[in-house]
Image (cartoon, rainbow over all chains, first blue to last red):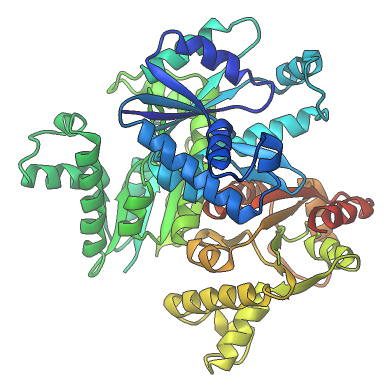
Amino acid sequence: MKVGVIAGIPGSGSTTVLTKALEALDYIHVNYGDVMLEIAQKAGLVEDRDSLRKLSPDVQKEIQKNAAKSIREMSEDNNIIVDTHCTIKTPAGFLPGLPKWVLDELQPDIFILIEADSDEILMRRLNDKTRTRDMEKLSDIQLHQEMNRSMSMAYAALTGATVKIIENHDNRLEEPVENMINTLK
Amino acid sequence: MKVGVIAGIPGSGSTTVLTKALEALDYIHVNYGDVMLEIAQKAGLVEDRDSLRKLSPDVQKEIQKNAAKSIREMSEDNNIIVDTHCTIKTPAGFLPGLPKWVLDELQPDIFILIEADSDEILMRRLNDKTRTRDMEKLSDIQLHQEMNRSMSMAYAALTGATVKIIENHDNRLEEPVENMINTLK
Amino acid sequence: MKVGVIAGIPGSGSTTVLTKALEALDYIHVNYGDVMLEIAQKAGLVEDRDSLRKLSPDVQKEIQKNAAKSIREMSEDNNIIVDTHCTIKTPAGFLPGLPKWVLDELQPDIFILIEADSDEILMRRLNDKTRTRDMEKLSDIQLHQEMNRSMSMAYAALTGATVKIIENHDNRLEEPVENMINTLK
């Protein structure tokens, strides 16, 4: 069966598009962070998600790898769509969400990047009262999306997976949803 | 001897530039798809090119790998220039033409990307009566060229090959031809 | 300990920013080319830097790999910052400074790209009387910086390292210096 990966920067609306598209698709939705947490909890390493980030990089790497392996196994009987980050913006720079050792285990068939215009993303973030985020400038938002495009090409070169870019503009949710359904069905 | 790879999106004029440049170069011109077809035919898997795409992904992957191996072997006695796609635009997104398992066998020395301005490419496609293509918007053409640039960098990181971008603008064919000759000679 | 890599195209000011930042950081500064030269000299292969480029590609590759190994070993006791090129512009195109076989040995934790606006870089190059460079157009400078961004994403996918972009604009040296100190400390 297939393993798809979906990613989008905060405010891209990737979760909204995914949730809606899944109503018409025969895919199991998996959040990469959740799988990592579950594995770490079973191993008695952490109790909650915050502790996960405090583990040593080597241990985190091992958990990350095992999560990929576990998701790949799930895909034997089901189509899987994995919700994760293409790159994560950290104080040390853009961190790849799916470095080589993860991709080698995960063997994804397709990466879907959900994008929107930088100003749409900025406004969505300003209107999102549930989160207090460090506000980024338009140029930062644009850079993050550009870096995700480049990174997804590197992921594709390593795996042979396709990279689909889906635009999610304001007030036209049905378009990206239909696009995603047609891409994954 | 050298293995060069040349690619350009439809309308970039990569074949025209290549054909003209080859008059002055000591290189054997190989089309990647042709080599794959030949291998599949010899193995009794297909009769024509269309059937190639209908084979299972695993079989296609194997043929793709064997084609790379076969081209690498040709390069023992001759300089080879391989005509292929950097990325192929499919309904599932941009597909890498040279994923890792191909590059590992092919070991190219140089990637040449033939580019033109998006509007030049659009007009060339409109004027090409020999093919009926789904017409792409300027922004789609620009995106495809951008994705090819990113992808070629990933190919370079994996192989150590150089990436040469050659612009092929309208009515100035001699410039990209000379550029390619100087690059490959 | 950490291995950081810093790169920037000529005129980006990467050396200036690095030198200044190192005053406040506990890092050993290593120039990749110097390490390669030292290794080649010890092996009796060359006497000076120019001869290095005249060695066969295979020998150069071996030296490049050994340099990475040697730098990784230094990092056992010290934080290391390696000064190198993300891509090198050659007549055959953009050459990756850190291809896979180097990254596999070097295992960097972070890539820092020092950037500036294309026109700032152009003017800095024009004013640099110590070097006679082939003058590049603004569009060439922009392309080189774009290619470095893409390449650094490929490096990140291969290693799991982060990619930090630091802008070094005219007359504001303290900003990139502070940024680099905060990133590496």
